[in-house]
Every structure is written in C-alpha cells, then in structure tokens.
Image 1: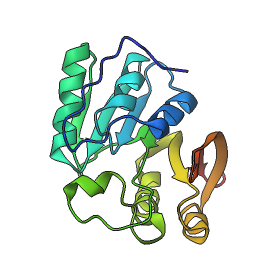
Image 2 (image 1 turned 30 degrees about the horizontal axis):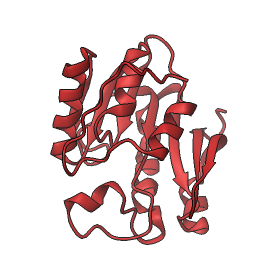
Image 3 (image 1 turned 45 degrees about the vertical axis):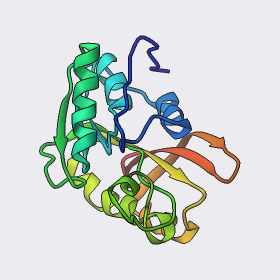
Image 4 (image 1 turned 90 degrees about the vertical axis):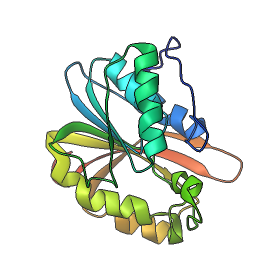
Length: 192
C-alpha cells in the first residue's frame, strides 16, 4: 500500500475530504517510478500526493476551483511536486497517462449546488462515470490502465453499460452499511 502517514492533508470547506472510499482506492493503488499519472476529481489531492510521493509524475484535475487550490496548497505544504488543473473531466487535460485514477461522484442524485458535485452521480449514479469512461481511453498511454471506484448504490444496468468496452478486474472491495464499494482496474478490451 502507498499510504504515507507523513503526508499532511488539510481540507478546505466544500472540498471532498478523504473518506472510506479514498482509503480503499489508496489500498489498491499501484504506481511505478516515473509513470505519468492523472487523478480525475482530485478533491484535496489525497491520492495525487501519494502517487507523486511514490515516484509518479502527477496531474490532479477537478471541476471545482476550490479543490484545485486545495490540492496545490497540500502539495506545497508537503513539498511534493504536483500539477493541478481545473477541468471538466478531460476538457483541459492534455496528453496520455500510464495511470488514470477516478473516485467519481457515484451516488444516485442530481447536484443542487456546487457542494453536491463531489457525490452526485446523476440518475442511476453513473452519468459522470459513463462520460469519463467514454473519454478515458483517448488519454491512456499504450498499456495504460484506469483505477475506478464504483458503488453498489449505482444502478446495475447503468454500471454494466458504462463498463462496456473495458476489461475489468476487481482489486479491492469494502462493504459499508448501505453499499459495497469496489475498486476496479480497467484496460481497454483486448489489452488486459
């Protein structure tokens, strides 16, 4: 596991704080020295900082400017190199990556305000994830992989639809009181 207890994370108001899902994703994360990594929806930068500390060259992206600033500040606080960018999924992301990590908004429901963007996955809970997966393959380097967190709270048919075209391997799971969280490693079909 990449967990480095020396990494200090401060979380600004309105920014997603690392929780059980973040820790589960971290437990499944494998980063190789020198890899190019992208964390989509970086929040406070928790996963990005751990990837960078492990030797990856990391870009942290988030739609919320508060999260981008929070991730940048946590990187400075810890003396860890990190490039942060405000982006609506891949809209401002350039280049290809060996690893793309996404702990998406996965609960069913619509965002009523900016603070809801970190949990509201839309109808079925998979709208944001499905859009992400339609674009992710274009940003993977040859042999690259996606690490994706999914929830049993999402509609099973929507989940199956979103994962069409991907080779799926479950790396970790955890049952919470109302859902099961799973961390999936995805590669484009035909390249396991």
